[in-house]
Length: 79
Image 1 (spheres, rainbow, N blue to C red):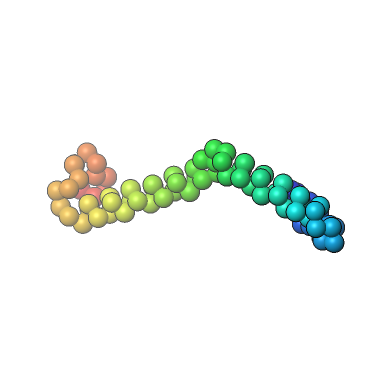
Image 2 (cartoon, rainbow, N blue to C red):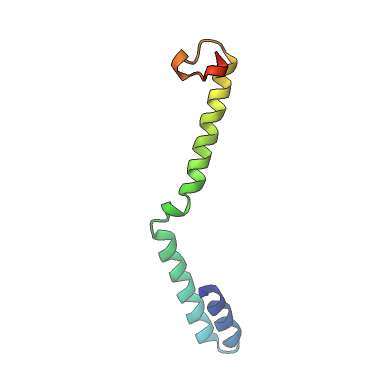
């Protein structure tokens, strides 16, 4: 919604340089505010997936080398 308003505003004011700059400046300020905000929750799912993938890869590597995993860490079918 904000982006469409921004683009519509740019097209509507392309002949008025002062108004055009004002709309552009306002949009850039709102981007900086968003970038400065705590956006950690937006990327939480990706970080969790990456951590899970890394853990699985480490486990697979450890399974290939005997003795790296404790017997309690092995599944019944891996014994």
